[in-house]
Image (cartoon, rainbow, N blue to C red; front, top):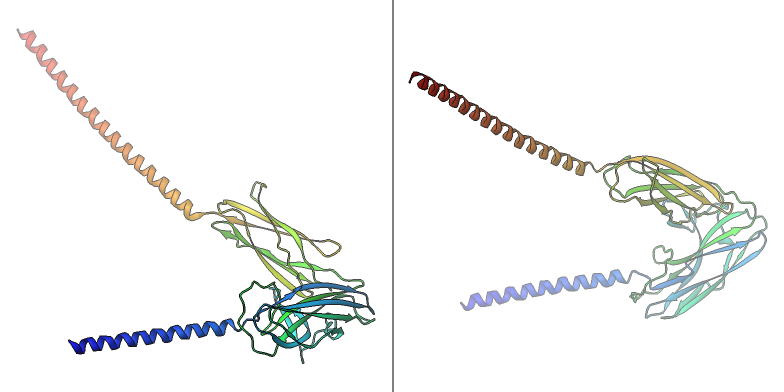
Length: 345
């Protein structure tokens, strides 16, 4: 008995040790994961400048340290482009260079290249963009970012302003517009939804490509009409920046849950300073066939039940009529028999 108790006690210690080891592992893992986040806020996350060729434009980017430790690092400038359909900026440095059509980082001078952002403090970086006299009109895109060289402390958990970041960096994006004749051009690559849906709302995919020299922000609405031409839904197209030579995909949910028949979706939008128009439409079908099948089956069952019950009543009525007919015949026979007896007497 004593040996059994000793053995149970050993097992309890083993289980406790394993549980403690798992807890420590998870705790340390969470700490390491949390420390991979930079406790910084950049403001403004995005800003727009405009300058004439041969002129200079100024800007300010502020970096706020929300952590409990100072952060030392470098302040840099890099061109960026947006090549995917989600609007993600791709920073270009080193041997990777951007076409002069959209590059501007080499025109930028920063007030500081190295510095330390104090704990719970802020550093403001002044910048100047010296636009060459022969600069092409249109959009130029660059980012001012902070790259820490010290250890990254654990973040405080404060909500950060939306900003573009890459690896261990946080950046403020700058959209520079060089004055001059700018080409504004865009087209709808796709405006579609599944040809058949069982229920709404229906996912509508809109893809717009910018083929101009400056980023655009299309504004407009998508309307939904039924087969009788009556409007059943309307939504505003989300405003998103579309950079030159890039496209954006916007997915919207359109219409109520219960829809039956053919519907037509129409897009009407404008973009650019001159308010150029974008328009497209398509048709699709919505029919809740599973519900319809259940309802049809229920109706068929009800009809069959009615037919069965009616047949039973008809059969019973026929049987009653036959029984009455037989009784009537019997009565007639009895009546004739009585007449014969009376006549004999």
